[in-house]
Length: 363
Image 1 (spheres, rainbow, N blue to C red):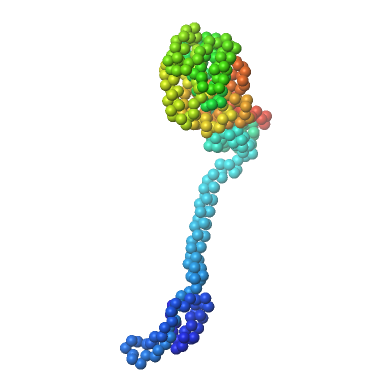
Image 2: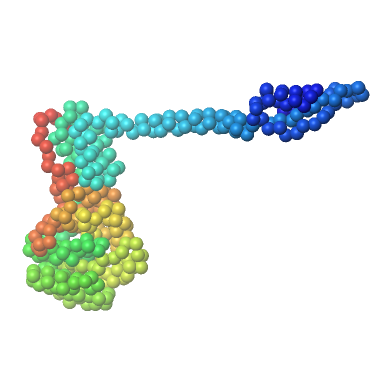
């Protein structure tokens, strides 16, 4: 902005009065005032001034600050709308339903599955039943039973069967194989035998031999596909074969291909079961199921139930993979601590013992 006066001090005074004492003087010069055609124009002094930097920045920042404040208010409003959509699902739950939700999360049931159970209870039970801990517990147990499939693949009939156990390191495959063979022979009256492909783990061979001799079961080792084929042919008196496999890294595709090649001599109708430790993270179990599924996994053997107080991962694994639970193993003793999987037992492990009923109707 320019200011003109008859003297330089007067021009500077005008600039100071209007632009402030911190205004920056760019140029000063002497010019002639009036139209260019007037030859009698009088000389004046002109000062070209710009606002102080702080003032300009403040002027520029004011619209930006206002815009940021407006945007922040819009974000808060949007978050409030999103939160309000979820608030009815939990904020106003009756105490028994809220307690159920906390129990499921404490048992490490997948968050979405826990919300599914509680939402179903909220939409199904009457207002009175939702105030009854026993009624809410009973509904959750029924819901879990409906979501989980259980099956015992070992048959009583004397049709030849081959069951292959696969899984992660430390899942308890070898002990599970011995327990399964003992269960088939002692409980179901089958003529069982064991074949071990787990020749890599430290002490694996000695453990398998000890368990098989303890139960009087025929046992064979196989280091290759050809040896496996020979071992299967040699078990002429057995009608039920349990094949224990070496642990494989689910992240190593090459190892999975090697295992598939190793199992190739087995009949196509073989039954492959994933041995999953209840003490292993659900995310790792899901990764294992995805990797071993190439072998045609037909079900899950849940082991080490006695080594953890958290059993929601079993339920989550069964639901997320839509795989049947086949057997539960809860201790090291062979042939004890082995039983067909039970949805009711799993529900009790996850939910705890049912509370006393108040006599209210379920719905």
